[in-house]
Amino acid sequence: MSSDLKRKQQKKINPKPVQLNPNWSLLQQKLKSDSHGNTRKSSNPENPSSILGSIQPKNSNLKFGCSNLHCKLAGKRKERPDSEVDVPKINPLSPINDDSSLTDEVAMDCEMVGVSQGTKSALGRVTLVNKWGNVLYDEFVRPVERVVDFRTHISGIRPRDLRKAKDFRVAQTKVAELIKGKILVGHALHNDLKALLLTHPKKDIRDTAEYQPFLNNLSNRDKTRKSLKHLAAEILGADIQNGEHCPIDDARAAMMLYQKNRKEWEKNVKDQTRMWLKQKKRKPKKKVKEGNASTNHNPVV
Image 1 (cartoon, rainbow, N blue to C red):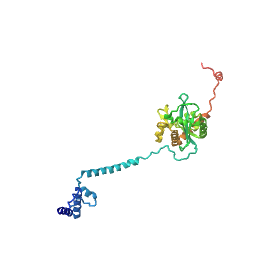
Image 2 (image 1 turned 180 degrees about the vertical axis):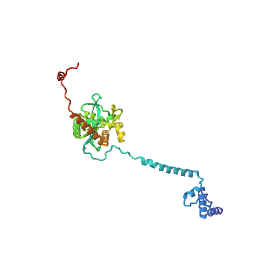
Image 3 (image 1 turned 135 degrees about the vertical axis):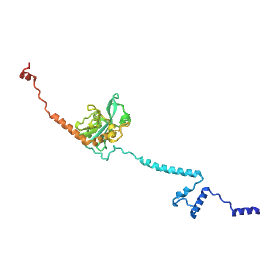
Image 4 (image 1 turned 60 degrees about the vertical axis):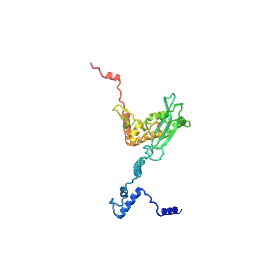
């Protein structure tokens, strides 16, 4: 028993030295040498990378982990520009204000549905916007005849839209009131007016499908019309009519096309009106009666 107690006491007095990690032992040696000024590999003692760079850790996993951390940090730095790029694009057709008052210029666009055997078009929706692009009137319209083709892939109109739609006569009367005495802007307006069973003075129509600078100049004799989608992309940088058409966007695009070319367009209209008035004032030449001509002049032999 006494021998066992002596062994335990000796162990407490002289404990076995704890084996340190090789990395720690190297670090202690480096710190001691730097404190005594015996060895100094780096000329800049304030740079922490000089100490870490002079120590080569024996544990390969530690070195691999540091390199992965650097890659992650570098990856985060590279991802910052990508996150900043994800900014919502501004729609070029968005109104610049919220003024919904009736202006001197009004743009109109209509969507049609098929009636009769599906080949005949009838009004299914009508939209009017002012010169700022704000909506003045936008209503689904229930045709007089039974609808057999909603043409949803283009018109965007569905059966549920026409269940509580405006009666055709009500919509027709309202549109006639809004466009009376106004400059009417649109694309291929003759189709919209035909569907509404309305007329409008030719001098007050600004049709983007008929404006000469907007036509395809294939030759002097043959000029073809450009679609509203093509004009909006080419001149406004707007992407419209992808799938179902939106009459609000179409009306805004037509109005913006007119506003961008308003000065030259109105000058062109005035020149054409002036020429038409000159032609109207010209008096027709008097026709000479054949009986008087034969009696006054002898035939030449």
